Image (cartoon, rainbow, N blue to C red; front, side):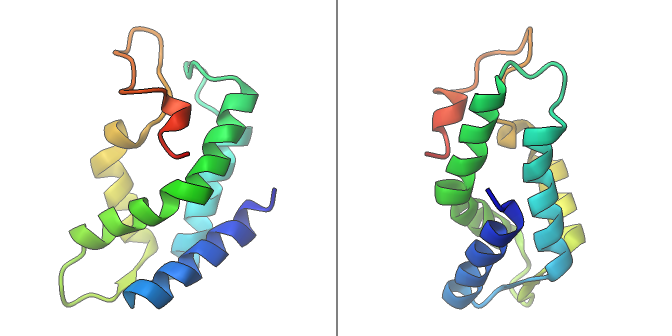
Length: 118
């Protein structure tokens, strides 16, 4: 799975539909975050490698558009580009609601975490 190519393709589609540009660096960071789910997971995540792979595939297929739409809703009206720092600020502000994996002692994620982006 080429995460970079899939992120770029989905971002180009989002740009055409929304008129909001996603900077190349923001695309790269987004792809790196998704690749880290696969290759550098948090040690307390309660998710197998297969579950993490299913999450990334599901996010790229069905979750990236709603994610970018949520970011767009937070973007000031006069702005028409997401930068790397827009992505960092958005993820930092919404991290608890974005993390799809339970950790020991956490309340279960609403619904099956892996199903969230299918």
